[in-house]
Length: 208
Image (cartoon, rainbow, N blue to C red; front, top):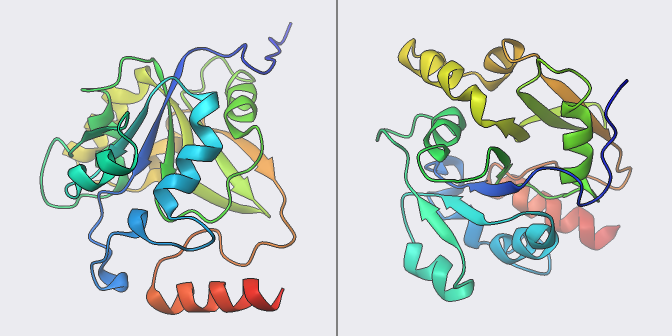
């Protein structure tokens, strides 16, 4: 019989905000400290998810003092290996720091955080006992870095990185990945990857 999960009935889960990239297409600015909407990204993500997780971490290589001035309870860690090796390295590195056996990862440049996303990802994950990851899909588009991951994924992540294979899509295929589907008809961009996209996003929101 399939196990059903209710709100607050899922295992203790930490949140990691992935902010360890170089943001080359944003001229190197720290996207987590930018204001895409009414709040800077760090505050927006923290406000929307703090009640659904145990602890909140930032995977980043800079601005720790700024993060902790904004949110004193925030925890930070760097990638295990330097060189900006992508979100897979940030995910693998998390397990050296977090205590929870489940981590919700979220990219720092996400524009939309679905309601009850932690619960729904846990529900998706519970559908297959072999699954070690469940990721968010919005309007039919997969957001692989927006995902719930079990600690047991660590060996697979480490092996992929040793083989210099950093694709989340390919890595997740080995982990019997499940999907949590969401819709948002008013969504223009799932994430912001350049200054041009940010300008378009803000203009479209204003017009809408």
